[in-house]
Amino acid sequence: MKPFLGRVISCIDKYRMIAEGDTVLIGVSGGIDSISLLYSLYFLKDDLKCSLVVAHANHGLRGEQSDREAEFVRKIAGDLKLPSAIEKIDVLGYMAEKGLSKQVAARELRYVFFEKAARQYSANKIALGHNADDQAETVLMRLIRGSGAKGIAGIKPVRDGKIIRPLIKINRYEITEFVKEKGLKYVEDPSNLETYYLRNKIRLELIPLLKKEYNPNIIETLRETAEIMGDEDEFLESYCSTILSDIIQSKGNEAIEIDVLKLKNFHIAIQRRIIRIALKMLKGDLLKISAVHVEDILNSINKGFSGKSLNLPDGIQAIYEYGKLKLFSEADVAEEAEVRFDISIKMPGETILSKPKYKFATEIISPEEFHRDSSVAEFTLNEVNVLLQNDNLKRCHSEQSEESKYTAFFDMDKIKGALRVRNRIEGDIFHPSGMKGSKKLKEFFIDEKIPRRERDSIPLIVSGDTILWVVGKRVADYGKVDKDTKKILKIEAIILRK
Image (cartoon, rainbow, N blue to C red; front, side, top):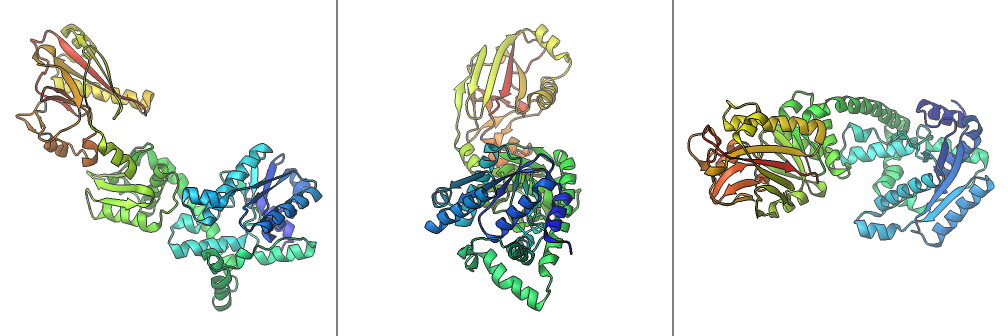
């Protein structure tokens, strides 16, 4: 076996962790792992041709002892003539504010501190002391809680090209021997001996049992498993990124829509991953999302539970309807459901609707202008509107991103009374252009496969009690342009960016 430092530099080289000229911020708690990391990089810095900075986050959870650990790290940095960033962070306050566990709160604040310190010292890498034992513990912990391949891949040797873990292939026994050999001092964290936390329980009870009764090399076995799963995860993630745009129909801060028929064309492993990617796009992370949640969504799709909503962590809902899987925030839906609107439309002029965000522009044009603009004089009104809408939608996707336009035309002389824009009310009747007779607006929405939760947010252009236009869907037969039309009302509806 290679000497300790040889193993460290092999890991650095394998994952291209450090390049010539890099400035590496080293997270040093004062414990045995971080001290061995600090001295390893210190001994190797000339070979690596890099600069080092020491960073210590004082969690303040053990009073004077925490302060002594901070001074211990400060002294070591001084002895090694390395610059240091040491800061006290308010874990308990952040924990109360965010409703997090102590461990999660400490980790989040620690990473925030590391990023800030890295900017302060222009460090482009942040080195952390996770080792092979940490990796094994992580794999077991995620297996116990329930996780897919990504979870079992454990701790990444390199994350986001910036967070690096040079000791990830070295076990704790080797670290202990290195520290003894070099006569290095470190501090013990008494909380590491408490079995209250699952990770500690795995470290102190489960792993010793597995070593004794099942596999003496369990640490290395689990580390290798994580490495293999990590490689496969990286490949699958890359593959999914190439097919994502074809499966996800729409995306944004509030909702994501997945084409289920296209999703089902792929292997179940790809289906799971696409759903996880979509959830992360919507939620921002996958915290609290487990394999069980993904399987619940797949079961809903495969068993055809149309219209049934699934409640996921952090207020995320999933619903399968009309061949689409829709993921959205419960809070956004609740807010949307409360919105009622009914305002007058200026003719001619512009009218702004605040929720949902639309601008309606109206003008009176001549039949000649209508024929010249549309270039489709022989088409029916509905066909003209469909063509114009499709053209505008194509233009929207290529040029305007989140902004969409819809246009409709009406015979001005047939419209009786002022125009208003409102959302649906009980008993609405609609006579769609090109169809015989009227129907309830509710039935029209069902026929058009418009999800229930979206129906209240669709603007209706009305004259009195008569619906002229279900915006973005269909115009009415009432008020249509014909060969005898003298004045034409043009209405353009623009969905405004949020």
